[in-house]
Image 1 (cartoon, protein in one colour):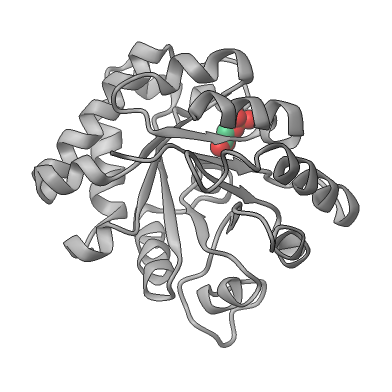
Image 2 (cartoon, protein in one colour):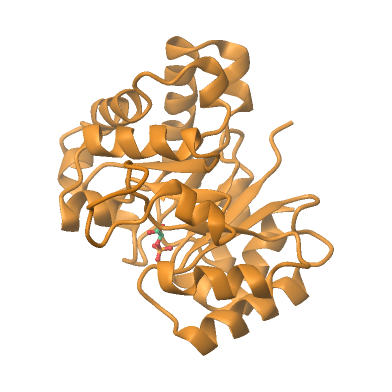
Length: 253
Ligand code: PGA
């Protein structure tokens, strides 16, 4: 019922040449799956969005931004609006990635404004949530995730929630080579889906895709995505290698 979704978060990597080469390889190797059995998106740095979107124009791979600003235009030095992202060919937008929460200091309130603005601007937000290692060790995972989901989605109607994808990314698993076990991840995904059912309704909660992120690699992707409530993955490091990313797409199919 929920189509698997694999998104690549390139973070602050690639350049004008390698970004285009990378997506050409990904497009070439996923002709049979991308946009068909699996939704596939890549999220390059802002400055390469347009070139990447152009290189993907005849493919079924979507383009997403790694961040967004909630205002539509004006004196906001350095920021990028939803309409600008649409203009260069984006359909998705990551909101509240843990690196933005913990390095840049984004709050749940700011992230909620970004999610809301993304939807208002016709983009599909990927809301990232996840606990720090000390929060997990203190058995605070559910509490942290509840706060991030509730505050991140505050004020969204049932209709608007349909635009949202959630990514559960335990912070301790991001870029560390440590992965949540499929069982650990499934437990939190199940918890998030039940939370959505409580906040909205059970049927809608069954429609929302919840991706897992945190050191997803070709050798663990299939096990993770075979879990009942894991509907795909948000891939960092492995999305920078065409062969690895293609293997993860294949594992989702
Ligand atoms: P990683 O990053 O796959 O390199 O752990 C995932 C993410 O930050 O989305």
